[in-house]
Image (cartoon, rainbow, N blue to C red):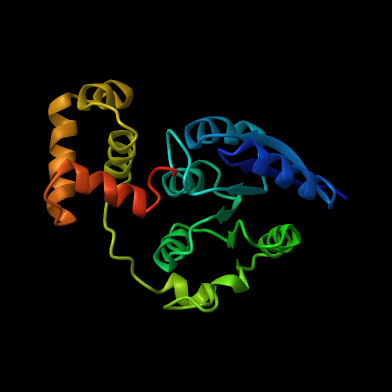
Length: 213
């Protein structure tokens, strides 16, 4: 019987090694490991994964943006998020973007194997550790909630790079856009989010796990 192909992505090497060990000890094959979202997105199609396990707070491209892109370029792959973030609105957005699972890093590692099995069967899984959080506690309910964040994928890319300390010129170069366009995105985000300063925008990015802490 063909073994399911799994990709793992986390910016902490020790976490990645622990996840790889528990997955490989089960009935799955780990076909790739990555430390940032951009490299993950670039490499995933060639690895033909059945399941992608990823963190939210990763450098270069956070897991939510990466997940949104992965659902387009690897539509058959199931996404499972494993993060430190207990914010229920992040779980909401993850499922709205097509996730099949949401775990916390404080979850038992054996829970990840169970989540992968559920995803491969076409079902959704949420760690019981989120059961006492505000809002919905089941995947079906989460999929029908609306998140208050309405930033586009491009805005999130700009925000991540700005929050990592890049200048607008550097962001423009990395995204192959003009500095004027980056400035437009920045101030539009500040207006949308009702923020009054660049510092407040960075604080928002950290709180919402657009960048890893």
